[in-house]
Image: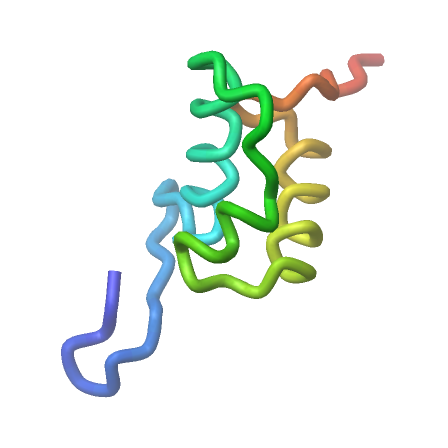
Length: 75
């Protein structure tokens, strides 16, 4: 969501950021059978920097969100 005054990206509580949506798109395409989908291709399609998406994907995976193979550790 963009601020109507300054145009800056605003992330509301509970709403995924644009970069998180790009990571979810990556996982959804892989789940749909696109074996050769890469973060580099998603970065090109969405306009995000490839290195930034790698950083966001790492946090996304640690959080155990949709599509991530990493499971949250339980005590």
